Length: 139
Image (cartoon, rainbow, N blue to C red; front, side, top):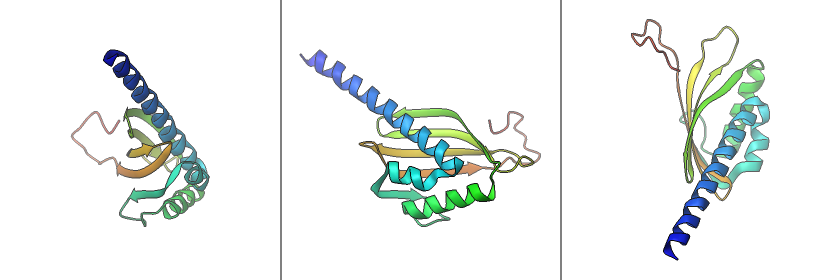
């Protein structure tokens, strides 16, 4: 009986992990495309917290900033390159190019998702460095 319970628990964790991965991907793709407020209504938990030093920590402040960024950069290209997910935690590694003439910036978004809702979001970015000794670059 214990083996069956463990298999079921493992399957449930795997399903939760994949659901959370899909939520994070959908949220970022749609928010980057100018639908941040809509995505917040769909996915943000009532206690949503965003850990970005440039904006207030609430969902509305982040959504407003993301939508403004989209309006300012209508030709922006956003791409998710890698995902890592385990249970409630999902990490997306990607790149964004705000304008066609800009160099792409590396992005990392870390989500804590529970019961289909995003409770916390961290984002980090790194710009390419001129004359970097790393020949592999950011991607």
